Length: 371
Image 1 (cartoon, helix red, strand yellow):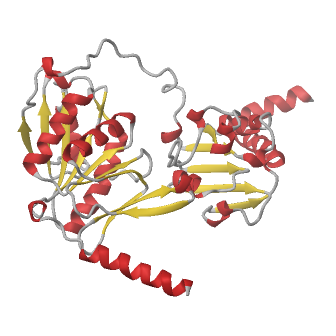
Image 2: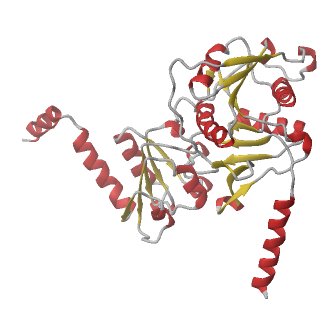
Image 3: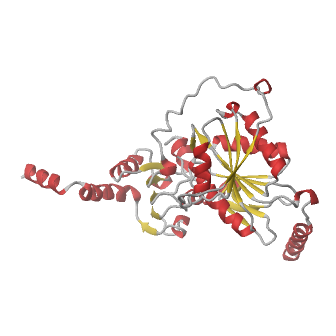
């Protein structure tokens, strides 16, 4: 009986999706847009990653890819970067009022562009700026927005399939925006692989004026103070990352993680439970609800590998997992699985790497001193 009811409900749900038609006034929406985020005049890496993903979506749909640049007077390099990383053309809204990010003028600029030129898909980075802007634009346009996506695709009907974790990271769900346009999604930095840069790329630039004056903007920028931690913690773009989980046992044992990371020239981090225990700060948390990383080497010590953690690390080139539980979920996606106690193995790895990394001449001098 339960199986029959589930089958019936599934049929009803499938029929509801199949019968949902896009309103006529949205059927002319075309092309894929990527918002090019500027961080103190430089293109944010997540925008480059999104251009690579946007290029794939545009090619599948048979449409063009556009970069959207909104800023003050330093926008020429951003347009060049958008074209170099795959955009066919660029939209530009340039005004002194856009020199610093403020929600009202940026929302007005992007919303007006969308209303006028009618894109089918609009992608933004899930940064502090991107999240703030995406929510305001989606609300203004009364369209759907899927946040913190880990995968983007288009189905046979050309609808954007935006996949993201749900229920605290225990499941993945794919969300469709069936009756509104544009279809909007944000993606966290480090989730998508960046495309190759093309030299001598060319494309047209379509300019649009900001239809707003300073008196209409409530917020004012008084000063800019960079986050003091941003210069010291670089998990999202580190080539080597060593992280610890509950299997590490105690807060004191995290020292083994940090020492190994420093020895091999990498960054260190942890899984969410350790942040919840207060053993490390949130800025060191790795996973869907923390930092998303794509290092060349990721070494996970005592981490079970829940879905939300997997989403944050599966872009790594090489994942080495150490765990005493041979059935730990992390072994399902790790490239190298080591069944061992991380507390014993990490110091041994540090010793082995130290010996290999010390120059031969220094090794000889040490030996002579001991003799």
